[in-house]
Image 1: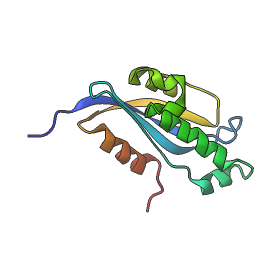
Image 2 (image 1 turned 180 degrees about the horizontal axis):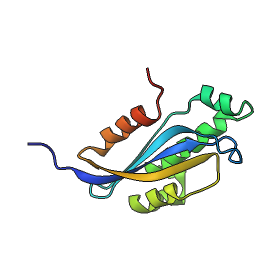
Image 3 (image 1 turned 120 degrees about the vertical axis):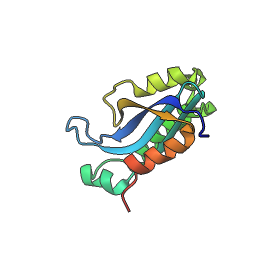
Image 4 (image 1 turned 45 degrees about the vertical axis):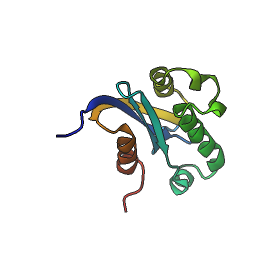
Length: 131
């Protein structure tokens, strides 16, 4: 018998080095499952893609912004006040539209019995280069 599956939501994190141009690439995923009280992020910055879109972009600063999102998901103390909110509020705050270098994409849904494994799967499928 298979494990019980629960609804979950996810959004892709995009890096938009020059928001005025609208060019972007995927750099992470956010996964939220209310039933399992899970909020997780997986991030990966492809420095070559970043350089191709904007040679003057600062990869260290963008990496820092991606780590901040992951810290908020993990409720890490260094994440500050947003990390003290419940996982659902943190997810909604993180997926709110913004015009910054790191932007969330639209929210999608699915079913999961293991949101942590699905976060890894979505990172491989939507972010990491194809090998």
